[in-house]
Amino acid sequence: MRKREAAQQRRHAGEFEAFVAGAAGRLLHVATLLSGEPPGSNPHAQHLLAAAFACTYVRWDSLRGEDPYDRTRQELAARFARTAWHHRRPRRQPGHGGVLESLTAQERLIVVLRLYEGVPEEQTAAQIGLPVQRVRAICARAVSQVYESARGPQPQGPRGRAAAAP
Image (tube, rainbow, N blue to C red):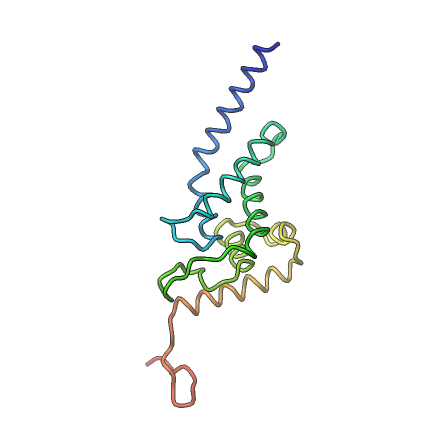
């Protein structure tokens, strides 16, 4: 009996290692986008991902057909949402950070889940506890803000409005 249990534990450990090897890069990028840290120096993102992987490992045997990537991403997003209020992004000179640097933690979470990870509005709303319409509005506003910040400051006309392009 013990040999069978040991063999099963080795098999599950091997499955989990293979999952981590395949998913770690993308999930670290998700965590880095959420944390707002630069890719080369992202200790908060690494901590979030390690904790999410640990949670997935503990539940590995009980996933029973559930996608481990989705489960780990959900855990990562939940951990970020719980800790984002006290996480301060490193100060950077304006324009030297990522395109999401001007967004709040909630806006980054919604934009990353919806646009980078392709999670449907309904699932995003359920995961973070907001109505679908609110998620839609926050995402639209955040995308508009990212677009405007990426365009940079617009030249002002004589009445304080952006000058028309020639």
